Length: 325
Image (cartoon, rainbow, N blue to C red; front, side, top):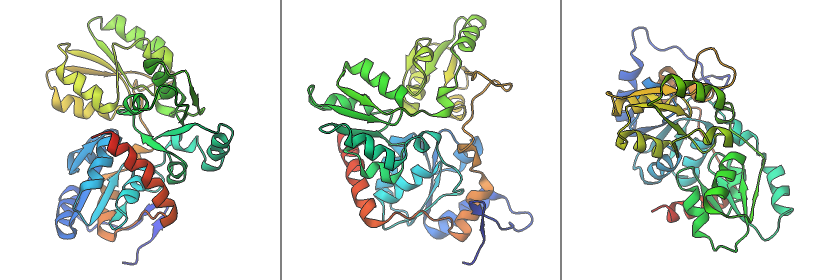
């Protein structure tokens, strides 16, 4: 279908009176399509998705879906990962501008030079990277399985980890693996949480427990009662007896936390410089119901990955999935 892609997304009107959520449901059925959404997307996007998860769960779901079309409601590297795992499927993203500051902090050319400067290291790269970086990688990991993947390697094996320095330092501390070389990259959302403001919230809510993602800075992790991936934080919130939590990760996760625990209170941890008291990923929030609807209708923008690059990247992702069963 002929349609204009302007500023990274479909620029076309919806018929007057169209309810995007209803139209998305109709188009999914008509086209055998599935919508996968990350926990950090807008609440209304999570509510219409067929599956909501963290990076590991979304990768696993993409690998096993029997849909003909995958609409990835998340950021660009997630759509790329789905295409790498499912080259025969059409993978769509609602907005090509939905990038990732962490992935951007690790250009493939620079990463290749970093790897070359450290020969003999097994390269473990976070899933928040481009296909080109994954093609340079031995094993991909997520925040949910990074510690287990590193622990699965022989104790004397030298490891090069990238791109998140905070996650890398956390892994090194938990595993005791001093033979790790870490790339100097970071996620702008998790890098900006304020330990001082979290401690102030703790004084205001003395019974609240602090939950933090391992991409946060060490000083923030020191304030936490529990550190874990998005899926692990959700599980802890469900199972722990506390009724108040201060949550140091992207604020989109609070939607699912509140849905699963309506009797509990979840307080977003504030960044250093904020008037709203929450910390959003501007890239994730670019994905809207309207854009998803238009993407399904016109089947654009579509993710493509050159085959030789895709095949090299797939090996590192499949290795992760094998180790995460």
